[in-house]
Amino acid sequence: MAQDLYILDELVLPRGIVYFDPFDDAGNTTGEVDLGETGGASLSPATESLQYFTSRGKLRKQTRNAPVSVSWAFSLTVDSQNMFNLAMFNVADLSVINQTNTPVVDEPFTVQQGRWYQLGGSTPARNVSSVVVTGSGGTPTHVLNTDYTLDAANGRIFIIRGGGIADDANILVDYTPATETRNRASAGTQPRKGALRVISDNAEGRNRDWWFPSVNMQPNGEMTIISAENAWAQMQFNVGVQEKLGFASLYVDDRAVG
Image: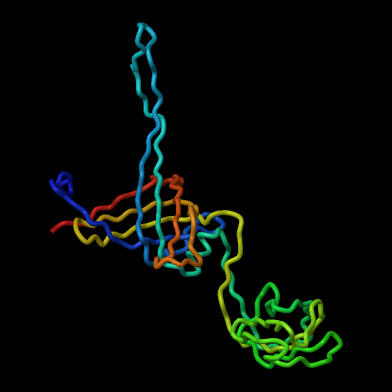
């Protein structure tokens, strides 16, 4: 026996780092991603059994209790709101938007006073300059801060109430977006699958490392986007633990002593 398995009063204050290793389309691991700050990780093994009750008397008695299945429910609270984690929580695919500084000419809008309009459509323009707003035929040229206001950083214009742009007016907008690169998560089709590893760094007690060769990351509950409360945003996952051919469902590795 490598180490003493029966240490009395081995108490643990659990801490550690959680890593997720996404599968590619062929089911192969691609390298572990540190999920960042995690508010907690817990494992709940469960067994299902089949009972048999004899009817050979006035009172039915259980004479068999046969375990027929075992499963592991793993729950994970993630505090780090990075784009990788947000994509997993929203069952979304990650992509990169490469915005260029190519001028946009005559982007059309039909507008209402008192409302905002996003430049760039489904791929919003950011950090725009050289903005010119005109009527549908190129005239008149509308006046900034009289007819409309501009949020250049977010690429948005606001039609001022009582200004020179009437309700239901057709306008054209010229602008130049800045050259920049940013990430985007867009809704996908299925939860992310991969392997999960927890490397312990306990505040108290011996460290042990957990490895799940095959899991799927199932978002659970709410993720706060705006709140009046003084609380950190979190994401909850139910981690589906399953078997992978040639592996056990989970492994727990002790650390060497002495």
